[in-house]
Length: 355
Ligand code: GN1
Ligand code: MG
Image 1 (spheres, rainbow, N blue to C red):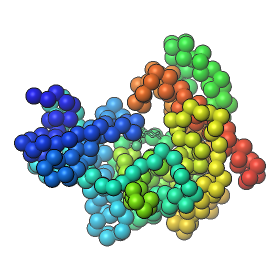
Image 2 (spheres, protein in one colour; image 1 turned 90 degrees about the horizontal axis):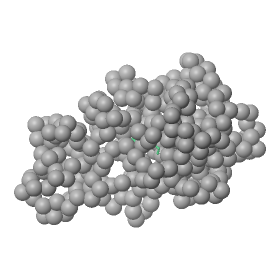
Image 3 (cartoon, rainbow, N blue to C red; image 1 turned 180 degrees about the vertical axis):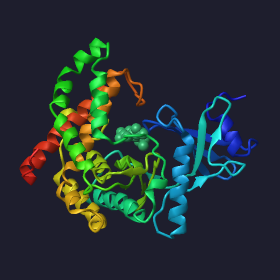
Image 4 (cartoon, rainbow, N blue to C red; image 1 turned 30 degrees about the vertical axis):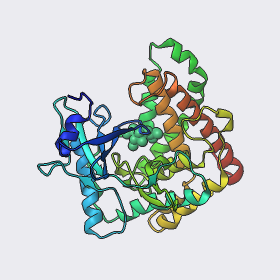
């Protein structure tokens, strides 16, 4: 009898007498995913264990996805998202005897993901795609969505969590992080600016993906075209800068977020401009004047937030993000801080930006 973590869920979803090849997919930092392929038919599906430390009520995550799926189907909006598959009993979630929660998606074949954008046109189409997601859902009542992680992209909250992590007793880590801590503290004004912005009616809540990095886009292996976004766990009402900001974070950078070649991290102007242009080409009508005026804050807010989150987790002892090696959260935070510094310089010189 196999003791693999996924076995019970796999048996519940599929015919236990069939043989399957199961391949772990390792790129996510939160959930555990497996590509399962039937040895008989050759067809595959995606089996995923929801991280309950991050999503304590998995039902809420699945409820949100079902709402989105149904809305996008019923409105006949041509916006593709992966089909959620049901377990016997017509349910979207399976709880195994260890109280792990599992779900299944249609597996989209001949698709690839990328940690970094290869050309500006690619960055533009990703920006159009995430823009279209929000635009397609502009008629959807976002109040129906569960807030799966309260304050998820609230920069002040993230700053406060960072401040608390400074009380850590891991002195070795505090010492190693000393210069990063100073740099991040010096930028507290971004959190204050975030508060001012989000208190104003000029910054309305919209349906946001909240993890709009390029790694969450499937591309067609042959044509290189965008197929669809994935990872909708954090779709919630939020502010416009979340998605554009995560795109800038993951596509304007010349290095991926896992890179430790810190001196090679730069802002790629053509990619940056392609994204802002692509996003506006879809969202221009929906955005308020203030949102457009402050559009260049998007990257600043999200990169700063990610640097805070990675360093907070490092100081807290790696309790949130999966890590591949002991100092990875430190390296991730440093990567994001360097990127933030490069973006600040870029915006000051190229956009006469005042920060
Ligand atoms: C996490 O879902 P995943 O592993 O792609 C995180 C995002 C971060 C991202 C950094 C729920 O994304 O907020 O931006 O890592 N998701 C959650 O790559 O915290
Ligand atoms: Mg995610």
